[in-house]
Image (cartoon, rainbow, N blue to C red):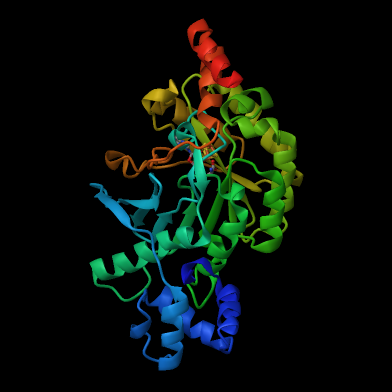
Length: 385
Ligand code: SAH
Ligand code: SF4
């Protein structure tokens, strides 16, 4: 089978070149052709020796994900749906702003964490994306936009791993993709402009800090374990105290001197004044008392029918933000972009075949809450099978 060169970071490509009997420095040329120039045809790589090009044609290819559809929002946001095979599709979203271009990238087809307020989580989990499938989203978007806008210079300045999936549950594939984003011969993005968002995979947060410290966003959503257990089931494994201590450790190596906490605002669930006070107390207990060790980003919930949850009112979001800001915790409210094309946070659903018991767990949870004996019986039967 031919190797997909999008799977490799520069070091991986250098090893691949060595296996072909080529000098390692050839990898730099090849890497630049692929990532900086968007080339996928070896014949177009004119400064590579003909013999090498022939070797590459038989042993390698540059295979990006096929695009199924593209939607352009009234605000300029673009959402692409990519085919990842076997009935699964994932999404990436480009968000243009005056001073930057951000690409929101997916790491998995579906997600096994099953957060209550997330439509990806409600779809269940199919599989991890490969490094090539992760970087393919950036490769495609960057070179498509350059062609489309007729520009030669870089368009995407920021990447956020906030699409479908929990990136730190796919660490082995995430790492080469991140390295390619940062590499000067690749996309040359600054560590401060590449953000990994996690629902709280504590041990892997430490590894990321050692291997490739990029900006970190942590999806917090609740200041107490009981509520967080319910909203983000991974909290049962890595409760708040462990998560907050992992954030403190990350700070020591982070490219920015703060951690961003994301907080999805759910009406009547986590948006009350009492909870705001608990959140202030929590954030003050950590960060060695240094004001500004974290920032809070409030995300108005983007509803979808199966969640049974509602978005906090604008007044509730504004009041919550005010209380936090008054307490000295820098708090912003995320602008909703691309909601007319279902590209806003948590609306990325792609199409995923659940190949695990995630859907079953969600059904069970719903059954427990509804106290519906009918549903519960069905779940019990499935369990027995
Ligand atoms: N799995 C990672 C990254 C992907 S989710 C994580 O959970 O951090 C990216 C962000 O979107 C997370 O902060 C998540 O909490 C938020 N999100 C998920 N569903 C949402 C929804 N329906 N409305 C608003 N934000 C949502
Ligand atoms: Fe997974 Fe993140 Fe959605 Fe939770 S919010 S289900 S971790 S993608």
